[in-house]
Amino acid sequence: MRIKTSFSRFYIVSLLLLLLAPSKLNAQEVFLRVDHPVHEFLERLDARGVITFNTEVKPVSRRKAASYLRELFTRTGDLNSLEKDEFRFWVSEFANELGMSSRGGRLEWNPFNIDSMGVQERTFMFGYADSNFVLRVRPVLGYGSRYVGGEQNTIRWPGINFYGYAGDWLGASFEYVDFGEHGNQVDAKKKLSPLSGAFINNQVGNTYEYSDIKGSLTFSWNWGYLSVIKDYQTWGQGRFGQVILSNKAPSFAQVRLHVNPVPWFRFYYYQGWLNSQIKDSANGYWSHVGSEISEEFIPFRDKYIVSNLASFSVLPQLDVSVGNAFVYGPNFRIETLIPIMYYKGLDHNTGRIAGDDGNGMLFADYKIKYPTNTVFYASFYVDVINFRDLLNGRTDNQWVAFTVGGKRYNLVWDNLDLNLEYTRVNPWVYENRNELTSYKHLGYQLGHWIGQNADQFRVQFNYSHLRGLRYKLYFERVRKGIEADIARAYKPEKYGVVQFLESPLRKDYRYGFDATYEWIHDLKSRIFFEYTVTSDEEPTRTPNYLRGKVSSLGFVLSYGL
Image (cartoon, rainbow, N blue to C red):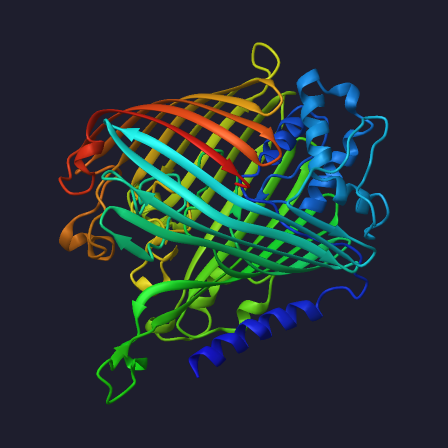
């Protein structure tokens, strides 16, 4: 019964939103990986004033990326020699979508061919295209080894990825990757790591296995799309983490609605299904009653999230975004199907009991492109602001997070970039007194990877002199204070106020170098070195092998990721 109910809710949300879509559908959408390097290429040209690329939400679709590339055909004179090489490379990657873009969204028999540039579509393991259907299939493979403090850890992953288009309005994609990590010093849960979290489905000794499954079915039209999707997305600026919505938590099922009716306005909405990890004993049941293998199964309580973001290009050099989100459960709420709703006010307006309230939050995002080759940006996330305390001079009761940063392209010479970024996440951000409505999925925060009561400062130089070859040199400091009992948030008069970076304090200083080369499309090799100095006053939070001065060296060879 619960399965049928959940499916019905998912189906109803998708159907109702689809009915809101325009009847004239003539475009197809398939989404890139959130960390696809073409985003970085487009961001560079946006900062240099060559194109206008909206960066508040990622990833973009393959067709959208192709539309940006199409703009460059008349602007190649503004590109330096390396950017021209990168441009040819990406034209080959998105040749099929460029062909569709050039003919109003219709599918084509042959891949797009730019005779004057000598570029054709890249090679796939399997590809098919006719006037009604396009299919592209490629493997996903990888192996890596990392030495941490003299100990070797390894990771391998096989998988498959395919995507395609049907008719003039439908796009679909699927990816399955099976990861296995082995070693005595594997960070299996990745709680304090910029890497996406993982739900370990099998552990044998010091070998950990987990999977990443993504898929999408997208209905689109000229100025928007509706997607039923399980994948990652990021909301808000931030090159080294996002305070609003990041890819820290594992991907979750969503219904997304994105519209861009005019050049200066974009609107984003999603309704998501989260895993609360809270057992619902009232709905437990016994399987195979009377059998030797009879056992009780207890499901988790249903948990949902709904969010929207409105973005405005106020000036050619200024983008401003504002939005809000609402985490709720265990019952689905029909009012969350209104995309333009102010969700944070729902728990104060519907007369529900405390156990059925939700948790609302607000956010804002800014990007300034001035002067040329320079970008300044900021993101703000607000859980709780107590204005009475602020007026009385008390600042420790503000559940807020923010990121501020800037990036300078072509700093001294072409293709040398400098990025500075600072993030602060106050105590209790992403938490709630009702654990069901915390801003989390599978125990991982949906926002910045450093979590509550922490800050991060990073300086990074990027450089490239050859198509596909990227160097990174960086310094990063991460500090994290106590993650106290939630009772201290709601009874400070009894247990005391938690101060920012209150002891026990962990400090990480990281110095690193990273070099990645994409030999051909999807085939990459990477080497990296990192020297860390870590101290932690909490005896159990940081593994012994990460304490003190630690050097790590590793390499990765991959295809498809």
